[in-house]
Length: 281
Ligand code: ATR
Image (cartoon, rainbow, N blue to C red):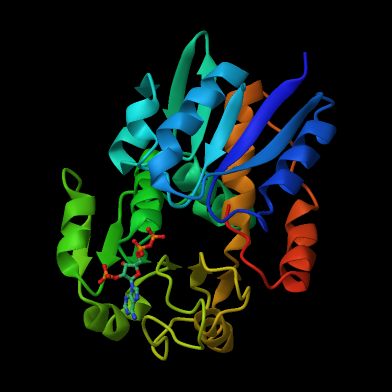
C-alpha cells in the first residue's frame, strides 16, 4: 500500500515538511507521498475538506492559519489537541478523521534528546516566555511529560493565566522574569520576537551559566536571544528541532513507526541557512 500524506496551510511553498516526511518514508522503507495542499482562503476551506475526504488521504499535517479551523471537520480529537485547542496532525482511522497535536510533545522530545539530564530531573525550574499557540502546545507537552515546576511570563499576563488553568504552574511578568532569570534552569522563548529584527523578549544579563536556553524561532536560526545566552554560558537549543520532532510524532501516528532522525537536524540547518524564505511547518 502506498501512503497518501499531505500538508495543508498557507503559505507553505517553502515548507521543509515534504523533505522531512519523504526522508521518513525512505528511512522506514515505506512507499508513499507527502504533498502540499495550499488553501489560500478560509472561505474555500470547507470545500477543500470535502475533496480531501473523497481522495481518502491516510493523513495530513495542518499548519498556519488552519490549526483551529480544522477542528469542526474532524470526527474526534485526542486529549492533548483538546487541551491545546489546536490540531497539527490528522489521521484517517477506519472512516474517521482523528486530530492530534504533536507540537508540544515533539518539542519536549527534541529538548530531552539534546539534554538527557532533563530526563532525570522532572522538577527542574522551567520558564516559558510568551503565551501564544506555540506556548500553549509546549506547556501541555511539558505537563504531559511530567514536569512539575513551570512558570509562564508574557506581555499580556491574562493569556498565561488562561493557559495554566487547572495546573500548579505560576505566572509572572516579563520584568520579573528578567530580574529573576537566574532562578530557572531551562528557559523557553516561544514568542515571535526575534524573527525579523535583532530584538529579544527579555534581557539575559542575569542568566546563570549552564542554563538551557531554547528559542523556537528558527528564522534566523541564531536569534539575538540565543546569541546573548551563549555569551552568558547558556546551553543553546535551536528552534528547528521542534519542526523535526513534531513531524516524527506525526509520522508515528500515521505509520506506527518510530523513525530514527539521526543526522537530519544538521541537514535542516544547511537547508534553513540556504533558504531564507518562509519555512512554515
Ligand atoms: P503563536 O500562536 O505562533 O505562538 P502568537 O499567538 O502570535 O503566536 O503569539 C505571539 C506571542 O508573542 C504572544 O505571547 C505575544 O504577546 P501578547 O500575548 O502580549 O501579544 C508575544 N509577543 C509578540 N510581540 C511581542 C513583543 N514585541 N514583546 C513582547 N511579547 C511579544
